[in-house]
Length: 133
Length: 133
DNA sequence: TGCTTAATGAGAATTATTCTCAATAGTACC
DNA sequence: GGTACTATTGAGAATAATTCTCATTAAGCA
Image (cartoon, rainbow over all chains, first blue to last red; front, side):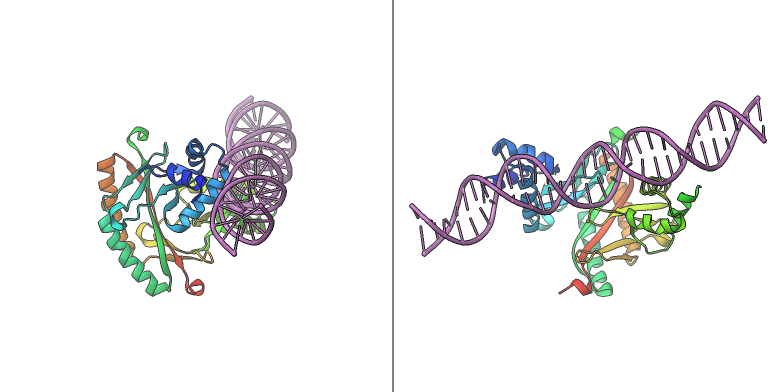
């Protein structure tokens, strides 16, 4: 755990953040002023591989990263994305039902297609109140 | 409907295809030998806007396009993606249940967050039989 | 203290996609 | 039939996120 890595992890530690690599870079630069962007990418990849961070994409062409709440069901959430302004809302409202569906789907798909399911994405897109009209 | 546009639409007309822009370009070039890549992109954007084609992304950094089956429930499917080889399987197996969940979620999220939901993504990632070991 | 190995920063390289712009084609109207 | 107007096209340049290269540095270790 080197200083640059610590700085990256730290930049992501606030919950509810959905930062691009560039934003992580800016935040991490505060703690580690001469960190390089390449290191940020490398570290994000590393942390993602370890399961500490999750990477996702909302349709613009920038990957976004968030701290992965490891507490299973507890912190599990999905994203609701505004196509107008890019706002991202974390929601947990249907997680129970979603989990149920996902479990069934994973089991069914495994059996039928022989896949070993590793992960899934569920995302809703729409217009937020401000962008609505 | 110009010849290049026809060529693009034609390239996508086979069901079950999930082509990148480059692949569409290659196929379309057969019918329209001097079509340009920019035109392919422009046309894909146009068709996507019209709802005739849908654009999605499996995690490599290329957008993929498929003919959008307009027949509502009938042709609706989601994707199961192999993280190993990139293979994409269309499945419809849980569409009924998914639709149910989605309807509830859309309604609930609309009410709670004030979003007007326009679309959603559900995707599973895993390893196909060949990549499994 | 010297040695091996992993990590770093800077900038170049890559790559999908978008933009620019001059040339063209199709259409309406005289 | 011919001419102005508009949308579309192709080619290549431009853009932008991400990855790669490589020389330098730092860290563990005997």
